[in-house]
Structures are given as structure tokens and as C-alpha cells.
Amino acid sequence: MAERWARVALVLVSHSRALAEGAAEVAAQMAPGVLIVPAGGLEDGGIGTSFDRVEAAVGEAAADGRAVVVLTDLGSAVMTSESVLEAVEPDVAARVRVADAPFVEGAVAAGVTAHGGGDLAAVLASAHHAGGTFEGFTPGEGDRPAVDGAAGGSGAAAADADGVVRASAVVRNRLGLHARPAAVLARALAAYDARVRVNGANGASVLELMKLGAGQGARLEVVGEGPQAAEAVQRFVSAVEDGFGEE
Image (cartoon, rainbow, N blue to C red; front, side):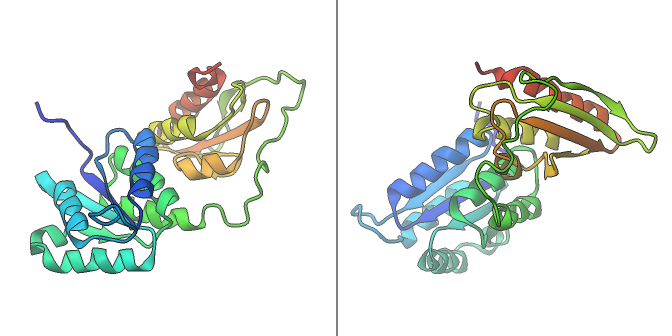
């Protein structure tokens, strides 16, 4: 049986084959259910972008009716991608968008949204949003020690009178809220009919969770709203308490 992919695929166009393949590898770790096709470098292994490689990548990504978001590393990669879209069949071109987004961060954000079932517009928006996620970010700014004792503790989810669900959790695992658990949590929370914020960040955004820089011992304040807020908040708290399955 053919492998089932998300309904939106990604094509990563870079001047370097190694860069395209590396970015695809990183994004695939965050979004294993998404078809991610790298198209980097020239046929002879040199630096540049190849029309034929990009055309083949778009064709592979768009097969079986999938929509496609193309991410590029430099301006001439955009030009090559747009030239390809002018040459492909109109029904394929109608399902492909070139994102104005950072190459790696955009691929990760778009991939997570696609893995969660997002449509073309949602995946494209996630890629675009990635461009501003780290503006003004100081590394480690979210790495705050827990209060009420070094070991800290987690507060059970409780709803306010207005229906807002609140809870707290202390990061227990040694590596903290790094890329892999951030992606797992973002995908999980996207499945709930709820809006969840973690220390003010969007809990359904892998990049915003990573921006928190929450290391071991950091306290996370989780706030949820919506019909499934209680379930979503409890899912997040349970994952933190479990140390994301890590030591």
C-alpha cells in the first residue's frame, strides 16, 4: 500500500544540495507525515539552482493531487521556482505557492502545520509567520527557574469563572523544551478545538515554543480557551510532567 502523506507537501530549493537535504532532514523530524522534497545545487554538484531539479521536485511533491509550498534560500532560487511554475501544467501551478519565509524556520513551521492537517493557506501562513517569530528574541529569556522550591511542581488544570483553563508545569527533562518535544506538542495541540498559550507563546507553534528557551527547572504557565481547552491543557501538562519521554 502506498505511503500516506499529508495533503500539503514541501519543496526546499537551495543553491546547495547539502543545505536543501539538511533542511529537509530537520523538517522531516518535526513533521514525519509530510512529503518534503529537497532540490538543491546543480547537476554537477556545484552551487546554484537547477530548473530541471526544481521541476522534478515540484512534480513529485504535487503528485496525487497534493498542494505544495516551496521554500527558497536566496533570490535566484525564487526566480528559478517561479520559472518552473510558469512552465508546469496549469492544474499543478494552481496548487503550488512560493513562500516568502526563512528557509529552515519556514520549513519547520510549515511542515508541522501540514502534518497537523492544515490546508495550503494555513501551511503558507505558518511559513510566513516564521519570519517574525524570533524578532527581539534573547536566547534563554524563557529559561526561568521554578518557584516554590528547586524541584517545583505542577498545578492541576482548573477553569476560571469565565471558562479559561489554567495550569502550571515545571520542565523536568535535562534538555528542556527543545525542538523535538516542541514539535510533538505543537502537533498534538493543533488537533484540539482550543487556543493554548504557554508563557504567552502560541502552544500550537513549534517555533514559538522553542523561542521560550525553557530549560530544566523552568516553570510553564499554561492557559487554554475553547471547547476542548481542559483536554488540551492537560495533554500539555502531562507531557511536561513525563519529561517528554526523555531522561
